Image 1 (cartoon, helix red, strand yellow):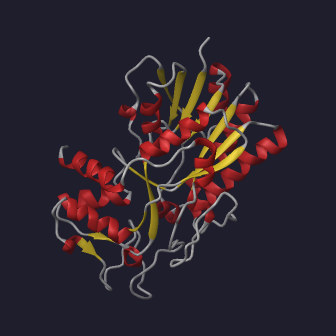
Image 2 (tube, one colour):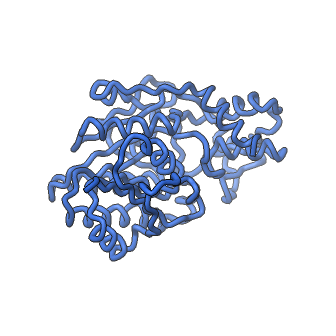
Image 3 (spheres, one colour):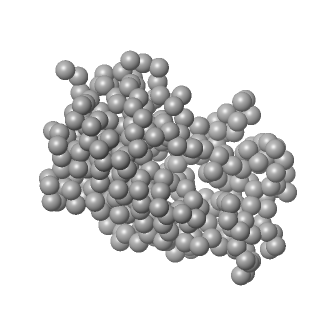
Length: 330
């Protein structure tokens, strides 16, 4: 009997890339769980009998229990999550239901089968924010300090995962990645939003003057790290996965416009234009900062390298060009 693997959020951005990364690397039966929310795309699932799609809302405990009882997986890769910070500011409840309650439901269901590992895919945003001009980086020992509803929900789920190991001996792994980018990402994220707006001749507005620093990681490098950890059978630990590529949002936007031969006039950072997703705030000072805004992320992934030899392989310029060409060729 072949190994069974459950991948939650497999129709999402990172989960979909993970499915396509592992399709040639394992003969395991892959059960893909997704509730097909606004950011999902069922077409990312490889066209193979190896992959079986099941609609599932992980916040529904009975539904999760039924699936685990029927398929009895040996491993779970948990990608499913509400992930857009702006949306969490407007309404935290979906983030609580999916990221926290949904994770707990999966953990409890995992206790009822002989699970070899529960791999929880998390984010470096649980660490909070770094000093803007410092050389400091997030390590796995950095204190958890979430600063917005999204990162709070992910931090909470991290704690539940490790607690299920401490209390119930459930084998686990937590990986905390930096900002992912790549093909097939939803337009709510910075890079595809800038590209889409530029193609339509629209400005992209950035709070904070676009000076926030993020560590950019290509999604394919992220998936490679996750699978390598699995191949090496590493459990009961936490690893950061970083891109070694700190850039301001403004610099990223300029790089996109340069690649597209578009004018910087498409960058909207006016003192009178205060825009955050669908949220409008009364200007307090210019440039305006979003509530819960983190100024800088920087990720130390040396522990992962020391354990596995992994390092990011895709240069930002190459990865960005790939994404831009994807939109232009649509």
